[in-house]
Image 1: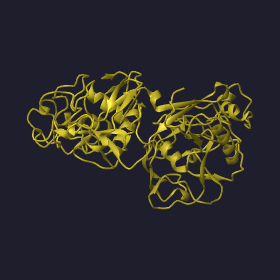
Image 2: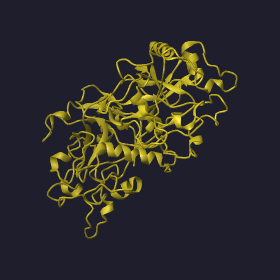
Image 3: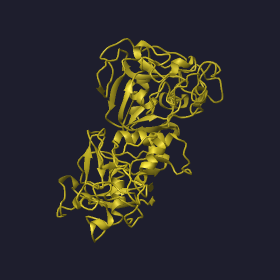
Image 4: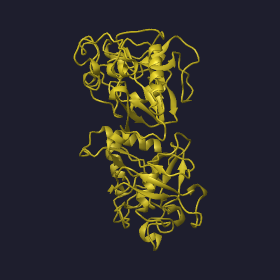
Length: 478
């Protein structure tokens, strides 16, 4: 259902019955962009169609009910991210309407209220409108059997709680435009109440949260379909040159390669669990010669002899050169901070939820690789314009091949212990580079492959990709 842009008073007033302390202070929220929101919660059938398995507890047959039409349950926030990533990578036809994601907490409440300011968007018996405790028979029910709200949405209250994209945190009293929640945290928000809860939990303003790896029979999801531009941000460099960034949402992944991976090198293990606690924005493309010139007023690249040179990645830049570029970029006052990605941030984005040799699969005979990367025997002995190959599932181009990309970390061995936001060793031999290049054989382009160079090393196959941490108040558009 199309949800038009608009404003609402988020939270509950101090005199609302059963109000939780975290529901205030009430504050004005403006949603500047419309979006499509699922008319119903994601069903078990839909989950199975994408993931191939059904994690739900409530699969038992009941007369006059198709169990697969019940909402999927027992899915963590992390599970939901994998579902969304796979759905977006599936090539499903959305008729140009955009990409799937979770609603923000503000979007969820705006849609649940559907123009109302009362505790519930109705004025009569809760059980006529929602599946809640004492009338739910201790289980979920097929979606859409209760009346829709004024904006055509079913089960916004009851049946299952619905994960939101936000980290949990207190509200601020100031008006907000398109709020996305705190930059980090320990728990993610979910909304709406469930079959297990009594009526007060189903109020429009009620908030709850759990760690993102928790699974409960009371929690599911509802999807937003929004323009892909919402997942991208842009900054304008001198001369009107634009840099595009893709939003990478924090999460967990297994870093490194398993012992059985073909082409594996010893420094790619042990495989260890890494958590990235904050969202970040990563360059959609490697930094181009045009972008480098806009900031530095020079071009160190060797490959300047073709008409399309402006769109080729800059090369012949050392790690120290990259730091000088970033220093000048940050001095432009574009909003936020620019830096190199850590090695963990780079691999997380390159994997895009995959666990295979490449972000698009294992590709044992390298039949698919030419569609995704420039490498030796395919690149004509030089760099090629960025963005000519297929992007990965998160909208990033050339994460494999074209030029190696500097990371911020010093090079060193991995530890086996889980890590949160690792930044590499305190000292080490040179700095890490990732991704492979036009000069390399296919094995070097594997997601887990690592290499290092001295900080003053300059090569014709060595460039960079920029990470951006925007000012939270800065619009992400052009």
